[in-house]
Image (cartoon, rainbow, N blue to C red; front, side):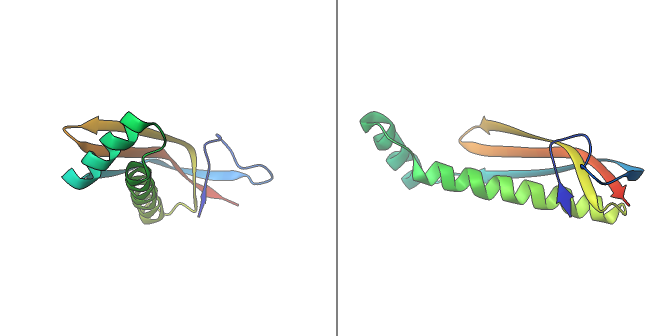
Length: 103
């Protein structure tokens, strides 16, 4: 399945619009990761634990969005937008776009 942030796919014609599709993932970061992230933030540098969690949440949200698109009969998702939120030490990632059929 083609997934793109652009409104179209170069060289391909959109023959049908199936509708808006969304995928969401909410992942908790445990206390050990929070502690090490805090130490990393104090000392400077990158927090590998949080980067890993963000990557996992993004992958999950995009996969869920693709599943919804396929269930509607789409073979691509265009206009994809990713949103990130932190709620009570939980990371929420939302992916949304328009499921389409490409010729």
